[in-house]
Length: 144
Image (cartoon, rainbow, N blue to C red; front, side, top):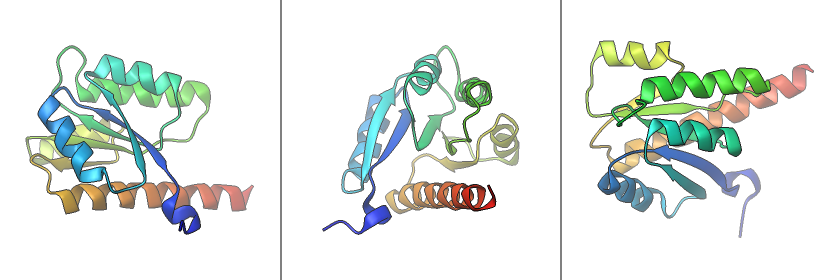
């Protein structure tokens, strides 16, 4: 039985060029109410984001062609052009440093997690981001 919003299916855009990492993330999330669309690079991620509504983006930072920083900036530009509220973007990177964290935030990312990502950490990051977005939406709706 579904319990309302807690079981609402969410659409996630996963931008990741490693087939192994895609498989791992899909396995981690298979028992959660998420539909996952996969983009193999930043350019595809931006295009897919422009064509469909997503609840959250998981963005690999190091991808061929357009990296995750540029893709995140372009997604934020698309949101502004369309007048849409910001979708949470969680950067996924193999490198943990203060500089990376700053770059992620500067380009419009909301959070970042490091690879290899433990299952519990990934699920927690997604749930926290989705809950924050839902709360922000409720505040906006109640203040209108």
